[in-house]
Length: 358
Ligand code: IPM
Ligand code: MG
Image 1 (cartoon, helix red, strand yellow):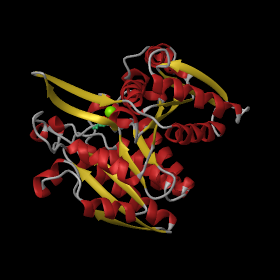
Image 2 (cartoon, rainbow, N blue to C red):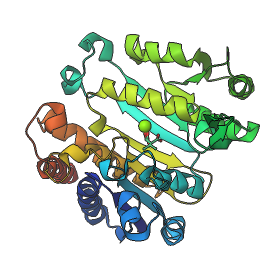
Image 3 (cartoon, rainbow, N blue to C red):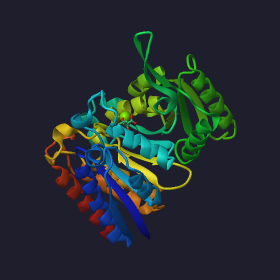
């Protein structure tokens, strides 16, 4: 198969981890007989420096025309001034909206050898395998009106939490579809005791469940969910929720895996390319020092193969190689070890090659 992948390395450690993931994609291409070509573009703070905006129309068009987009991370102290009108994060949000990727999949699994890397008691972590599906193009991030104004001498800031029925329906449909090939349990997280948008969400979740009798649906309030993710994480299978709740809960859930540096994500729409990125940020404090953990981006490349290129065997080969590398003791600084960024990739590549010979 031939595929054109747009790379958006971004800022901070983004370029380092994307370069590692490309090495793994190239190794898979050689091993399984595929041809991947890459188009590298600016997005985020680096694009602000060059073009004055975080995402140009040309770059968005290149992404829309690609088979898939692999992103590193955006942002950093250089572009953090709260008074500024252009921010790196605008590029990310513009890309999500421009690609129509309304469902953000964030799988959280715990490698048995890493239970000690998590601050939770090891006995809580056995069997943790959660797929968080975060709605990505609606809710507080995009609702209108939004903005700041001076009213009668006082300053006012407004964000709007708005959802249309179809926006909720499509992400719930995906949650139920993906639950069918897992443990057949969906937890729909909302704040229906307070928010109108959540009451609409809950109604649509209930009617979707009625059409999927083989799937068990639980409704859970977001405050309860944030507690249960820590007190009984193994009880979750698919967790589906609105944009901002999902943002917060996935940072929390990443602690279960031992490090944010391990977690990948896939953002999918109904058609067009998917967007793949690790869930960690640009980590400017360690940028350029060869310390970043590339596994979240490498696992994002695996999701890219599975969801955008329909290459499940190749995706599974990468995931197995990452598991084996961790089992063999590869540990970057975030995991309490001394393996460099390139050493982590080398460990994955070694196990990828080993898989081929058996
Ligand atoms: C994430 C990030 C982004 C978000 C930021 C950088 C805008 O936190 O992908 O989780 O809030 O969506
Ligand atoms: Mg976040």
